Image 1: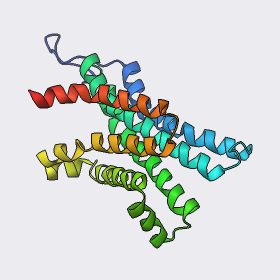
Image 2: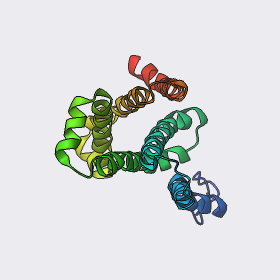
Image 3: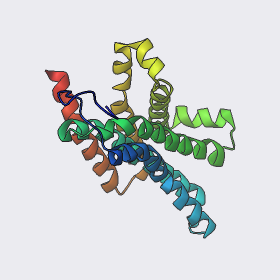
Length: 211
């Protein structure tokens, strides 16, 4: 990105307009605020006593669904960049990934705090005994590893291993969808929609891997 004066008319470095620079500076703060909107809406719903007869179940479902939505939006950034040529999807991809982990942590916190009052023995008993919780916890552990290594230092330190690790995001997505499908028990419409979107987003990556 070049900015400012150039020494001669023959210089090929493209100029970037002030408006474009301002948009780039505003992009991440704007996305940050948009990603927090679901939390704000949940708080407003809670204040208005609109969480229903079982608030814990409502918050658990809300946090899980937003984890999947954020994860799929994050996965969409690379194909969007590849097919559109736009640069902004890659600039916000890391932030979206961290917000995915944020919502996953809210989901796990709901389970550990509101369901089990932070009783570690009870928490791990459920993780070991209930397959849908086992799968969900495994997906959370994958997201934890991806969040911890999402910084530039880890990219430099791990080199090719970083790419192999971060391909695990698709396993996390599939694990989250299986966890959700197991949980709903009856209405599979939304989980199947998430699965279809995940498969669609995985196809470009599969083509690259098979070359």
